[in-house]
Image 1: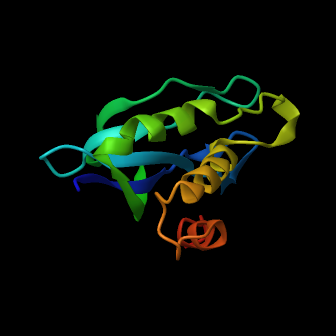
Image 2: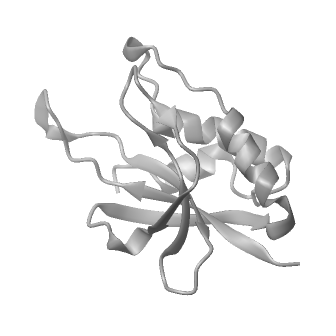
Length: 139
Protein backbone atom coordinates (compact mmCIF):
# COMPACT_ATOMS: atom_id res chain seq x y z
CA UNK A 1 0.00 0.00 0.00
CA UNK A 2 1.30 3.41 -0.92
CA UNK A 3 1.60 6.05 1.80
CA UNK A 4 2.93 9.54 2.51
CA UNK A 5 5.62 9.82 5.21
CA UNK A 6 4.33 12.13 7.99
CA UNK A 7 6.60 14.63 9.74
CA UNK A 8 6.33 17.44 12.23
CA UNK A 9 8.48 20.35 11.10
CA UNK A 10 9.53 23.18 13.41
CA UNK A 11 10.32 26.75 12.52
CA UNK A 12 12.12 29.46 14.46
CA UNK A 13 9.89 32.50 15.03
CA UNK A 14 12.55 34.88 16.35
CA UNK A 15 12.74 36.72 19.66
CA UNK A 16 9.93 37.89 21.89
CA UNK A 17 8.99 41.53 21.45
CA UNK A 18 9.01 42.12 25.21
CA UNK A 19 12.36 40.41 25.89
CA UNK A 20 14.84 40.05 23.03
CA UNK A 21 16.91 37.58 25.08
CA UNK A 22 14.08 35.02 24.88
CA UNK A 23 12.91 33.20 21.79
CA UNK A 24 9.30 32.75 20.80
CA UNK A 25 8.03 29.17 20.91
CA UNK A 26 8.78 27.23 17.72
CA UNK A 27 6.07 27.02 15.09
CA UNK A 28 4.97 23.42 14.46
CA UNK A 29 3.48 22.17 11.21
CA UNK A 30 2.52 18.75 9.90
CA UNK A 31 4.20 17.82 6.65
CA UNK A 32 3.50 14.99 4.21
CA UNK A 33 6.29 14.11 1.82
CA UNK A 34 4.24 14.00 -1.35
CA UNK A 35 6.64 15.18 -4.02
CA UNK A 36 9.59 13.90 -6.00
CA UNK A 37 11.98 16.70 -4.99
CA UNK A 38 13.62 16.82 -1.53
CA UNK A 39 11.44 18.84 0.86
CA UNK A 40 8.48 18.96 -1.51
CA UNK A 41 5.06 18.06 -0.19
CA UNK A 42 2.00 19.25 1.70
CA UNK A 43 1.96 21.29 4.92
CA UNK A 44 -0.91 21.43 7.39
CA UNK A 45 -0.61 24.12 10.03
CA UNK A 46 -2.34 26.59 12.24
CA UNK A 47 -1.96 30.17 11.05
CA UNK A 48 -2.48 33.51 12.75
CA UNK A 49 -1.75 34.61 16.28
CA UNK A 50 -3.26 34.24 19.75
CA UNK A 51 -6.89 35.29 19.57
CA UNK A 52 -6.99 34.94 15.77
CA UNK A 53 -5.77 31.44 14.89
CA UNK A 54 -7.23 29.65 11.87
CA UNK A 55 -6.68 26.49 9.87
CA UNK A 56 -6.82 26.77 6.08
CA UNK A 57 -6.08 23.20 5.01
CA UNK A 58 -3.34 21.77 2.86
CA UNK A 59 -0.61 23.97 1.41
CA UNK A 60 1.83 22.83 -1.27
CA UNK A 61 5.32 23.72 0.00
CA UNK A 62 9.00 22.95 -0.10
CA UNK A 63 10.08 22.85 3.54
CA UNK A 64 13.72 23.29 2.59
CA UNK A 65 13.09 26.74 1.09
CA UNK A 66 12.43 28.40 4.45
CA UNK A 67 15.41 29.93 6.17
CA UNK A 68 13.69 29.58 9.53
CA UNK A 69 13.23 25.78 9.43
CA UNK A 70 14.61 24.28 12.61
CA UNK A 71 14.11 20.58 12.28
CA UNK A 72 11.84 17.76 11.33
CA UNK A 73 10.78 14.51 12.93
CA UNK A 74 9.20 11.64 11.00
CA UNK A 75 6.40 10.29 13.17
CA UNK A 76 4.33 8.01 10.94
CA UNK A 77 2.66 7.61 7.57
CA UNK A 78 -0.67 8.39 5.95
CA UNK A 79 -1.90 5.73 3.52
CA UNK A 80 -2.99 7.33 0.26
CA UNK A 81 -6.37 5.61 0.68
CA UNK A 82 -6.85 7.40 4.04
CA UNK A 83 -5.63 10.85 3.00
CA UNK A 84 -9.15 12.31 3.06
CA UNK A 85 -9.66 10.99 6.61
CA UNK A 86 -6.37 12.63 7.65
CA UNK A 87 -7.56 15.97 6.25
CA UNK A 88 -10.92 15.60 8.03
CA UNK A 89 -9.21 15.08 11.39
CA UNK A 90 -7.08 18.20 11.02
CA UNK A 91 -10.01 20.32 9.86
CA UNK A 92 -12.12 19.16 12.83
CA UNK A 93 -9.49 19.95 15.48
CA UNK A 94 -10.73 22.67 17.86
CA UNK A 95 -8.98 26.03 17.84
CA UNK A 96 -8.72 28.10 21.01
CA UNK A 97 -9.01 31.79 20.19
CA UNK A 98 -8.89 33.15 23.72
CA UNK A 99 -5.99 35.56 23.40
CA UNK A 100 -4.93 35.32 27.05
CA UNK A 101 -4.90 31.50 27.18
CA UNK A 102 -1.25 31.04 26.03
CA UNK A 103 -2.58 28.38 23.65
CA UNK A 104 -0.65 28.05 20.36
CA UNK A 105 0.10 25.88 17.32
CA UNK A 106 1.99 23.39 19.48
CA UNK A 107 -1.14 22.79 21.58
CA UNK A 108 -3.20 22.34 18.41
CA UNK A 109 -0.62 19.92 16.99
CA UNK A 110 -0.52 17.87 20.20
CA UNK A 111 -4.31 17.50 20.22
CA UNK A 112 -4.28 16.49 16.54
CA UNK A 113 -1.57 13.93 17.31
CA UNK A 114 -3.90 12.21 19.78
CA UNK A 115 -6.52 11.81 17.06
CA UNK A 116 -3.98 10.68 14.47
CA UNK A 117 -2.62 8.12 16.93
CA UNK A 118 -6.12 6.69 17.47
CA UNK A 119 -6.41 6.23 13.70
CA UNK A 120 -3.07 4.38 13.58
CA UNK A 121 -1.23 7.07 11.61
CA UNK A 122 1.42 7.74 14.29
CA UNK A 123 4.05 5.16 15.25
CA UNK A 124 3.53 3.99 18.83
CA UNK A 125 6.96 5.10 20.07
CA UNK A 126 6.04 8.72 19.28
CA UNK A 127 3.84 9.60 22.23
CA UNK A 128 3.29 13.33 22.81
CA UNK A 129 5.90 13.57 25.56
CA UNK A 130 8.52 12.00 23.26
CA UNK A 131 7.64 14.37 20.42
CA UNK A 132 7.82 17.39 22.75
CA UNK A 133 11.25 16.22 23.92
CA UNK A 134 12.62 15.80 20.39
CA UNK A 135 11.22 19.16 19.23
CA UNK A 136 12.12 21.13 22.36
CA UNK A 137 13.54 24.60 21.99
CA UNK A 138 16.48 24.33 24.38
CA UNK A 139 18.73 22.16 22.22
